[in-house]
Every structure is written in structure tokens, then in C-alpha cells.
Image 1 (tube, rainbow, N blue to C red):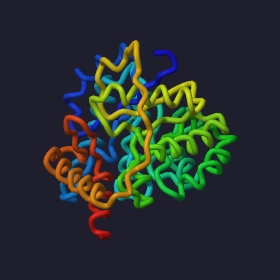
Image 2 (image 1 turned 180 degrees about the horizontal axis):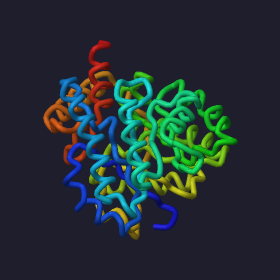
Image 3 (image 1 turned 90 degrees about the vertical axis):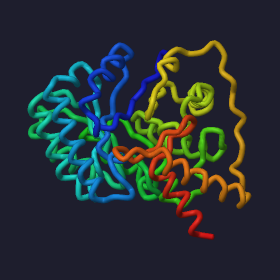
Length: 312
């Protein structure tokens, strides 16, 4: 589909199985986000998290060294500057691009000020000849409040091409429950606010992953909504999974009727309990997120549900 760009998140833990998966995406011009952050953790076992983070760095260097990333538009999401994993992630990226220039950019989480972007770029690049972009992920109240100043400070450096909205972290930071979803009015109010700021500074907006999977209509109706109501011509989507049937635009798209989030406490409680149970029952030991037949549940959604139940 014209002007539809897909950025697919790939967990780096089981990296030796990726070669076959990556081949089928090349012909569809899908960009990759090799993830070393949210999908590479264990909420219930900090020691396992350390092990998984190490595996993800090894995986990045393996894929780079074996030329598996050659010819693929590749980005890497590292851990935020405030974590214990940041320095090791930066070292791995620096080594990879110094050996072979397959990595196009870095997705940097928890960005709240421009210095985080500039510092990350300067640590990774050895000279002015090294070209790598930094994609700030805006996922907190402070990050959104500072978004315009973050982009404007990049005027002379041109490090930023894209800005990514991290919906799950943003909702967790704000204490929302439930998190707004693509059939909620408040969801699109957030997207409109953020995307307008990004486009006013001539940068590109990358949409947050969809929470509902195997739902073709939510996928296409959301794209339709962005194009018709938010004046976004180039739709940049980040996805955690992809059905190859979604590549082709269907003949008919059923518009989703938007609604307000229910204020009923019983509904919120039942939904929180459902999310917690689904997360625990479907989570893999090697990944932090859970995939059921109908829903992608990141750790933020699980934590948001837990926080809600603790409040009452």
C-alpha cells in the first residue's frame, strides 16, 4: 500500500532462529526494530533479565557478523540511559556499526530531553562520517511536555528523522486504567496531539503497536482514521506481530465506532483481573510480553492492572 511503512519489533533473545523469518520480510520492504529493551526482561526474575539482556547483545552481534541484516532497513531499540544495561548496549551497537554498517538507527526509550539523544549519538558514532539516526521514544508526561523543545534543539544536528510514541509506558506513567485502545476517543486524542507536534517540526511520526492482534479490521480502520482525520499522509506503524494478509489493502474497511472508556468500577476490575491472568498464563520465560489469540499484553499493561487493583 502506498505511503504505508511498517516497523516490526523482533525480540533478540532467540536470534539464531531469525534468519528464516527475516528473509520473507525483505521483499515487502519491512523495517526491523531489533529489541533489546521491553521484550527482553522477566518481571518475576531479575537474574533471568540480566541473562536475557546479555543474550540480546550477543544476538545483535551475531546477526550483524553473519551478514543476516544486510539489505534490511534495521533499527535497534536499546535500554534507556537510566538503566544498568545502557552502557553495554551502546558498546554492542558501536562494535556492530564499526564492523559492518547494517544498522540505520537507534530507538531510544524514555526520552525527556534532547541531551539524551545527543549523548547517545555521540557515544555510538566515532566520526562525522558515521551516519546513524536516533529515534526518541516519547512515553512519559515529561517527555510529551518537552517534545517540541526536544525536536527544535535538533535543528543543526539532524539526528532525528522519526519520533516514536510509546503508548503503554505513557499510560503507565499517567496511571490510566484501562489503557485507551483504538476504539476509544481518548486514544485518538492522544495520537492527534503528539503527531501534530511532530509534523509541525517536519519530523515523521511512528505509531505505537496495536494492542489487538489477529484483528484485521482494527488494523485497517486505524490506518483509515489516521489518514482521514489526522492529516497523516505517510503512515508509519510499529507492530509486534504481522499477518502477511495485512500487506494488501482489503476492498472494504468497516469503520470502528469510537466510544468513551467506561467509568464503571466493576468493569475495570474484571478487565484488570483478566489481563493479569492472561499475562501470567501466556508469558514465555524468554520474553516479557504475552500473546494470546486476541491480544498483545506487554509488561506495562500487566503492571497497570496490578496498580489499579492495589488502589482500591
